[in-house]
Image (cartoon, rainbow, N blue to C red; front, side, top):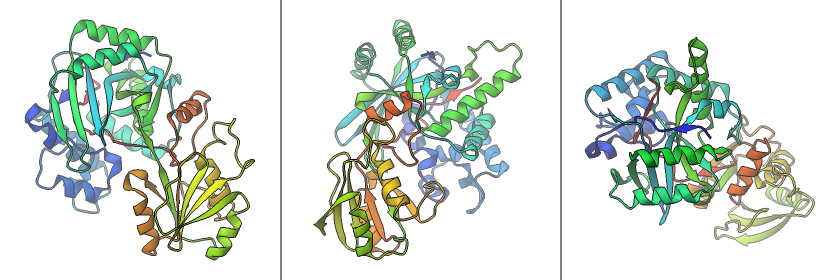
Length: 414
């Protein structure tokens, strides 16, 4: 992999916690407006600048993108964001439920993305790509990092461990979720060279989260390359910012489904239809969580059920066919409930496992939804196998937690 250090644009230590934010795509405009209330330093003024306009303003209004650039400029003028003097790497550690993952913050190559060495497992939508491309263009920067993983490497682990034994530059526990975030600078020339050299021997990196941001950053880089007759490939704009974690450290949690109706079936008729492809067990009123691959948890009519896919209903030798999201999408959502397009059908919604299965129960008990389906999480091995074989996961398959915080470092394309 072709990676490079960069001169990060960062908040001074004293205001880092005040400035940082959740990623732009995990909350809506009203939630961002509420979180940023009374805080002029909040990064939401740059990544969700519609909050500076009256409620209801279209986040894709040209004035909103212009405001992002204006606010980014103001943050630098006021000293809320300051560029480092030296190109360097950074370490970003996140601790959730007692488990810590250590990410290396670096610049990845646009060419590696375009040539498929940075591997995807999800499809992207052109409208979402264009939204982020506009944001990169007006700011001439990657304001938020993307989230990559790479095969474990002992040399990188040892180097990172030396730095994380020191006092961090930033260290705070986010009020929103209670997760701890720490940040260090790798500024020694020998260590910087060692990281660049070691990654050169790594054959691939994988997008864990941030497919649209990755695509947008790469497309803007390619756009700038076409506009530059003297383009050589080592320009700053031909790289984009990523936080890269060893695969063994990451946690993929479940990504669950709730459906508004049973496609005209009664509860009993629906359960009978399920018995064609699943062994159905009544688990009563206590929340039941799937315990293994090919087992599902269903909540219907105040009861939880365990569904175990019968042999022959899936293909473990097929990276896509072996996924529980494929089994449930085909045999339950499509064949029984008539939901053919998970991206567009408004009868279905998706709930990240971070909210717990109690959220599924709540949405069904409220009458908003009729049935909930909980899935066993995808493994990192499954994700990597799918990316390596050039396959694409079905929609809403993976949910990574904790999410990266934005605003700890920014990459300028200049």
